[in-house]
Image (cartoon, rainbow, N blue to C red; front, side, top):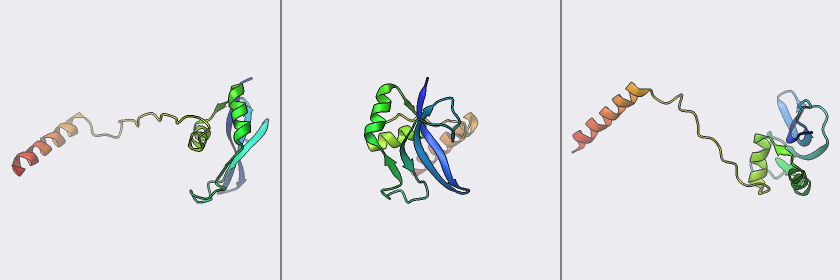
Length: 117
């Protein structure tokens, strides 16, 4: 049985509210869960104390048992100091200029440097 710490959505349409739960990884997102470990209310301001509420002791227990947090929950836990900071992968380079455009930019930069001399 693989356990995950993840978000379970609640609230009305366009008014999301999430519970942080421990659930079997194969169960549906809003389906059966084992225990509630906290809440997340994205509608509150970033600095509001009730935006993210965590039960530290229970979360530490479940991580010790082998539960894996989802990406978003791992970010919450690392910000709270429960787990070490997560390394974020580098952004893709798909949107960066292609080879010919980079050559043109480099040539323009060199020309501007010579003109400044």
